[in-house]
Length: 226
Image (cartoon, helix red, strand yellow):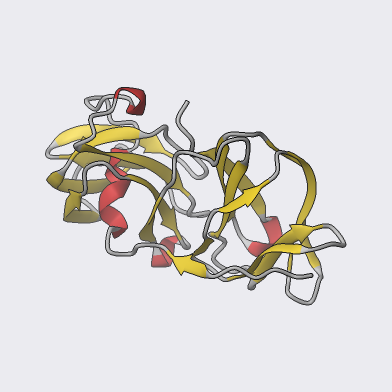
């Protein structure tokens, strides 16, 4: 029987601001976190956007972040921060300059999405611990021109349904193992073959569909603490 799960939108209130945290040299790694800090991971998911440099509170944070680059979880103290985003190697006029405020004790993934002409930043709160003995998995649709899609077993049940651009599913508890999955349109036409997808126990995954519809691919990130 087809199962349908309620989808949630990215928390757009964080938008551009959190993108700055990727590769920040002056922040501690997440495995040494303070519960008063926020854990933030950055994903560059805009298929035609150039590399960017990010500054936080006037300090260089990351240089040359490119399409499909993702950082580890990094720490940012709770509270407000000044964020500036520049084209890589060009610290003249920021393309974005804004204040950021993050909440301590929470983890986030922040993604740069859409094509360059409509570039935007979106963020979602992450879960970092799986139910014991299970795999915890969610799927995000970050392809700007791909149609609404489902994700399910090839010629079988749908696991994540009705994902549109910038939607991300809730996490689903799955048995560990290897799955022959596919991304498909609601009328069952396959968009991308994901045969041999392996899910390990006690692990949390985010699977993001990226790139344009004619070059659709996935990025699999591990959310769980190492």
